[in-house]
Length: 138
Image (cartoon, rainbow, N blue to C red):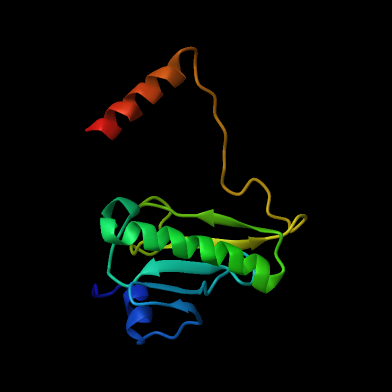
């Protein structure tokens, strides 16, 4: 637990939240300021700041729980699908790893959700791909 972390406080039971998933290593609770009703935040109990910091032993359980929550917003709320997203540092309002699972329905009004687009210059895409491949091998 990290001092001053609101998610650690929620996990410890010191700050109220509406839990939808309560497991030994992971929790899921409703976002207090949801994009749409049923917007869930999935977080590890252990204080981890970003996805690259997530211990290997939690990777598969974290993704598996995300899959279950994505199914739950459809099966439990009647959504047609979901928006699943995670920020790492930039736009991360709480410095405790969390994944958003937002129920979506066609025509729900969410458009262009923070996704500005750009284009690669000639041969630039290949250069970016090479840099990323190199970083993955490091």
